[in-house]
Image 1: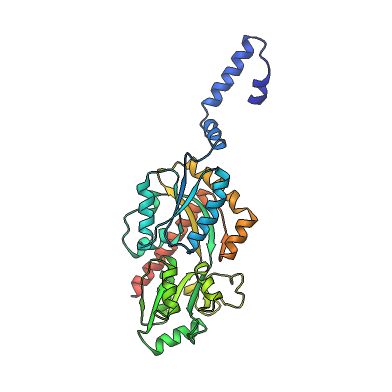
Image 2 (image 1 turned 180 degrees about the horizontal axis):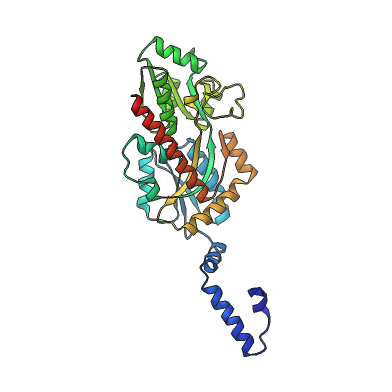
Length: 335
């Protein structure tokens, strides 16, 4: 008999009272009972902060602001976006870990957690220190050059770099985009120089002025410059062509499969966050990402909504670590 129905009945004698009491004690001893009750009544205890490792205008920032607006309404709490750019994401992750707050979150490119630790020493362990909550969106990545440049394809970019060794200065977002472009440089035997920036917007301002020759950045960041006629997209790194840019080929279609990579933005908390809380936040994020307005807003920014459970996001990160660890080892061997 269902406990709620059983409890609603008016007990007629001591036997009835004892039966109901035993049933209540059994449920109270079941771990999932109070977990479910807490989950049902879930609300953040105060304001929520979403850290991003990029300046305003970067794709994690754009996604965070769309998410914050809807979660704020859903939770009836202030949800702030806090930009902490620089140091390949180390500044943002450090701020998360130092906050010691269950409701300080991080929205970041997954490559920052799977590839960056392969390229440089970082003062944290992504697997031990961070709690995956949900994937947020697949990020279309664009390879862009100045509009004033005569280069209109990846092949032309490669040929120009070969004709003028050392002339190609480039930027790629930290993580998988950077490792992929390094593979492109190595496999095509190009002499080039990587130029570091805090984020894509800073790099693109120099790219517009031809201070660097190419960049691999989220489409969301490049789109306004392309629309203004200041930059040109020569390829996207994703497996499929980007919405709104059907004429732009993928890197694989252009003959450069080493540049085939898809960014993935995800939401994380510190490892001190309980699995129950991560699951509850994930459920609300999935609800927000199912909103047609949010999905359209992401797509217009060059992102494709892609929510997940905490377990699925953790599984994705594990697979990406294995893949890029293998790729990095291959590059070290060939170098």
